[in-house]
Length: 301
Image (cartoon, rainbow, N blue to C red; front, side):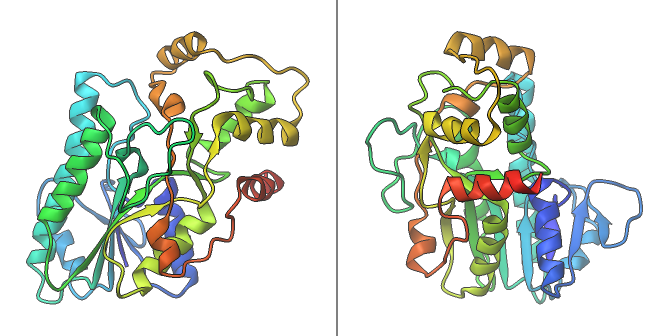
């Protein structure tokens, strides 16, 4: 297995999961420091690292600058370039292989769908409404670059992943820390939906898609039970029991986002997504309900 950009939160968990299954895992990393199982790569230039793809069973591309930042022109450019250049370059490398990877899974995001308020149906792969705005534009361009890189000998899967909850990275440690300080009230009006996934089920879903020969195209990688922001924070509050609960109106979130150099869209956009294709293929979630996921994650801390 080759993981491009595999040093982040999700990539590290994939490494651990698949090494535990007996896979030989090679990480394509920007770091020039020699490390076992890591190969230096430049996400804009073909080089000696391309030899690692020859005969590989699986390629997973996790490369891409985080969107947890202010949407300035410079950050817009870096977010787009980091996704498109790496995907296109991997497409060129796969095309040059005599024995290309059997399956290539490329990161995408559930944020590709439109803001989905209230009782509107959840977005499935077949019926989901594609949104608008910068984050959606980045997601659409990312998937388009992946589609353009199609190779007949390599099955391709786009991972439209929701927020992934784990104790050692991603958003959840920050959420839990703020909740302990009393910031576990509804954010904004609290009616926006949260689509989420336990880190264990993320790794299991990737494994499932690798091993399911009929799986190709875009997949929503999220738990089947999204919930409103108000309910999510209520569940955190019940488990962490802060002595004081502070309100989080939109104007306060705007100030906090400015100070933390991020965007309120990450909190206030209503993401209501359903993993129809995974379920149709028979995938079974270990953590289908948020309460079970929170119980597991908070017990582990």
